[in-house]
Amino acid sequence: MQADALRGHLDGMILAVVEDAPLHGYGICEVLHQQSDGALDVPTGTLYPALRRLERFGYLRSSWAVVGGRRRRTYELTGSGRAELAARQREWRELSGVVGRILGVHPAS
Amino acid sequence: MQADALRGHLDGMILAVVEDAPLHGYGICEVLHQQSDGALDVPTGTLYPALRRLERFGYLRSSWAVVGGRRRRTYELTGSGRAELAARQREWRELSGVVGRILGVHPAS
DNA sequence: ATCTACGTGTAGGCAGTCTACATATGCGAC
DNA sequence: GTCGCATATGTAGACTGCCTACACGTAGAT
Image 1 (cartoon, helix red, strand yellow):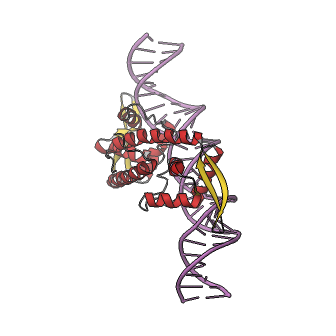
Image 2 (cartoon, each protein chain N blue to C red; image 1 turned 120 degrees about the vertical axis):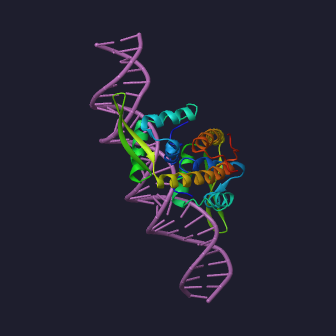
Image 3 (cartoon, chains in turn blue, orange, cyan, red; image 1 turned 180 degrees about the vertical axis):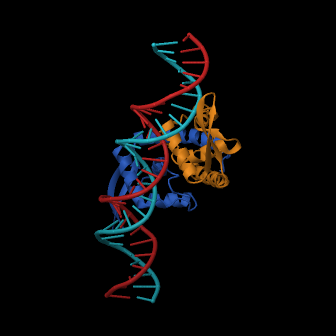
């Protein structure tokens, strides 16, 4: 998969991952990898700029911590981030319906 | 909708539209608009470069015609275009499953 | 005459993804 | 003891595809 297929959907997925519990960048990568059964392998050069972008927009809030001698920047969802996530979910529902219909592909999951 | 949400999926949808019958650019716009219940409104500055790109890749073949005094460039799917469409459909099935699962959104249609 | 629908196309900008690189710690294997 | 791997964060520069805005032209209705 990959390429640019995720273009525009990565932000929403990041917000979804940190919705339940705050998490750091590397951990977000792992969750995405696992929850997609290995299909998603977001490179750090994509993830970290995305996280900073989301924080700049006010959707995420970050804080530093040291765990096991390693610096960690943990991100958590803000109020407007929660609203943004809901908007992304609505948008995805509409988009996936439209694209699937035109492509003639009925949803897999 | 819109924005960049279609990023990467427009090509596949174009191929899908001309799968059954050859069509010209403007007509493709209309079909996309109708089949999406008005959700899709692909601007010409997006569509025409996409068509040329797809032709350059060998997925489409075009021919000029004059209908009602107006020049028309009609596009039809090639063999490799058909294969590409099938690949895009597979990819979409996988992608939509993954994104939907992570986003926590079950398909609408 | 003017407006709208039809029809094709280019130029320039913007944004998000990619590859590749840079830096640093902890831990197990050799 | 050092080598490689997993952990962890980050930047630089290129690429690509979508967007807005513009340009050109015909047909038909008001």
